[in-house]
Length: 316
Image (cartoon, rainbow, N blue to C red; front, top):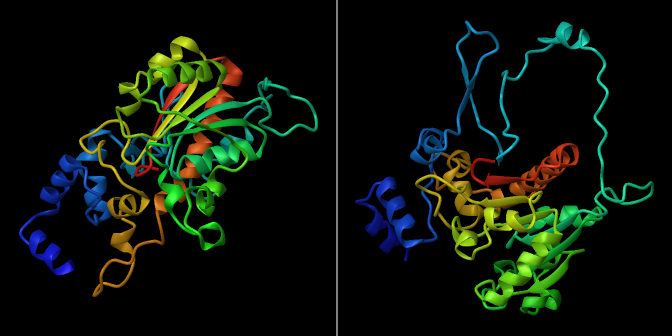
């Protein structure tokens, strides 16, 4: 098979192969260098790279952009990373700040920190569910929705309990979804949509990690859910983000690791790329997804405003 693929790809550029991958939704990815991805069409279309300078006269430095795109509270970079003691006098001269009071549901001593936070979890596989598992571990009520018709990929990945392959026995699935409530729905059924809308009205946060456009096609996009819950926080997490020419690139974290330069710098020059183990960006983005949700909850606690978050695993 390797020889056949080598013959097939020998006359093609990376760009040509990538175009076919996007058009046919194939599970393949080019091994890109950092320069190829940073200056490539996807990140350029999303204006990912930011330029900052310590002083107006200084040459600006190129920085990676935000780990997530917040609709109401976008992350902005004002200064580059500081040199040692660069802002010492400025910081010491700042007046003492009094933190704004935070109002949290059931804010009683002895309770878990996220008690009272309600999450409707449409995440699947790992990068999303591992994030909401963190919230559930600290007291949030998380209702994880999945489909029997389209089985969660993590349910069919070993290791299995007693080494017996079974959807209920996957260690990875049970780990990523511990402490959650589980619900099976066919989201294409109109009756399911009514249940999701009822849960969205109940929830503080809705999460989803379908391909861009899928949740809107089901009539469950942010604008639709906000009609039943104006203060809702919603996060969409996928490989390349909700916009750009590569937004429909589908696959797993090992493919994203190839696209984002990890495989290109791993291994030895005279051998094939040596990838990070497993679906690398999944393990990283679980933390970023959780962070993004917490930041939005903190903002809403102060202002009452919900918001939409576009999280690209490749950018994070």
